Image (cartoon, rainbow, N blue to C red; front, top):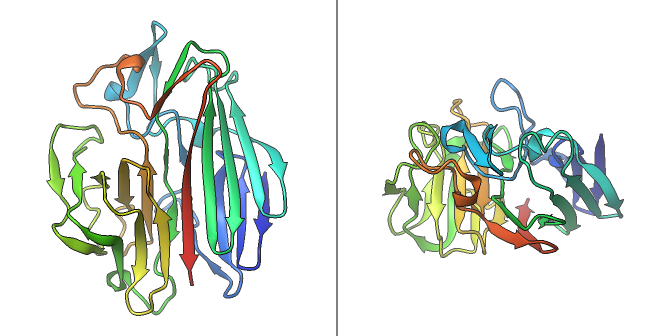
Length: 293
């Protein structure tokens, strides 16, 4: 089921399936700002990545002494969440461990997704609670896809990924199979912007590590129209699009954790995590996205 909230500038719609934002309408122009999940290109809008980001080593994990198969980015994006609160400009969804999640990941948890509108900004807070486990370790990340071009008068080359200032974005490599291989590369050196081109993502995503910039934006160069993501507090920021030409969207993905390693451990307790919670503890992270039109 889908629920919507709005203010004077934006109308946000979120689906209980995955607690996924599926639409952001700019009300003054009627423009749709999120990618609309054409399955011929990429059939998602803005999935939540939990309880891990990327792939598992060997496509599996060993947790509590048993082996579990795991698909990319965890399961939160593929199960139903429950709306627990709605106001004029906020939506709150929860996912609790249940008969569908426990065969995938044998831990009790609460995952809360809070969406709040603030002028031209959407704040999306993810909160994880550990109700009963002695220790709860997890990874988490965001994966919103922003529609390109902003109108039919522009093409891919009219856009760039822009930082707050000079960056030499160092990227960890997960080529060719989506697992970390111990290598890294510079996406660019001493630049304030990465030009968007239709071949930028021919080898998949670029995972930038420890950017100095608080914001990573998609900017239409001739008009200044933009999507601005606040990535402060995130150790990793990925950019990605499906390898369909021309580009139909671009993702800016702030992550708190990394994919598995090619020869890494299978044991869940040894996988690098975003947070480790003792019983009764909680942890939150927020992605704030501003749409400048």
